[in-house]
Length: 262
Image (cartoon, rainbow, N blue to C red; front, side):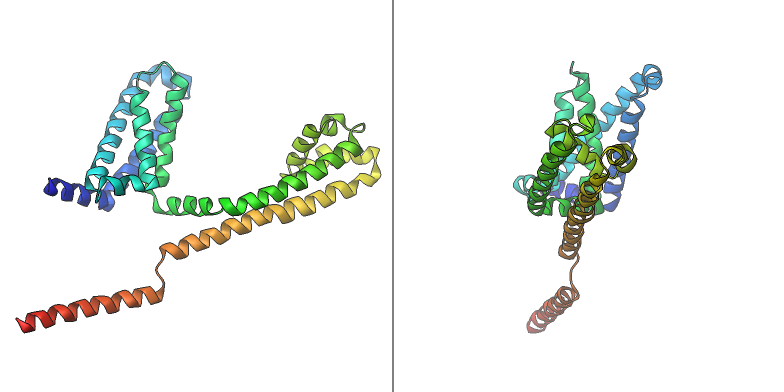
């Protein structure tokens, strides 16, 4: 059993193993995409189905190799990305032949997300984004207050002028979401209102300045900061590298001393 465990561990850690899995995930993504075209699905549906089954069993074997090669079953399931891979493959097996074709297709396309777990750079990026969640909460609260205040003000000022945009509070909030994305905010929203109320420019200009240029950039700043922090955590510092070299040399010296004593 130990021999099988060692073989599986070597296979799971081999760079070629990950390259093959990444290639198969890409093929899986292409098959799922091709199936959305009705003329391809009608003509090659059976081939796509068989290819999908083959890929599913290859992914199952991959999970089994990683599970057997892990230090322990507990260590495998303590890794969130390993749990993610395991759940995606398990759901694919459970939904084979399901009458809920839409659910099955969604699970199949979720297999494409496994590219995140096997590509280190993508995994690092997602980990950095997860680190931003606590900070995002505070910024989202600030953004929510900002939207609410401007939504109430916009509804009060422009309800009669542009009821399609500011007729109710939820209409105003949806309009402000469009404005903050800078999508047709000037020609589509501001100009018609400006023609009726020339003093309304201050409302849109201040909203853009505060919302798009300040609060949204807070999101970007937090994300960039956490990406750099995640990169620093995964990249050893020169001091750590030097310490590792010293420890290695000390271990070699101790080994030589033991041989000399013998």
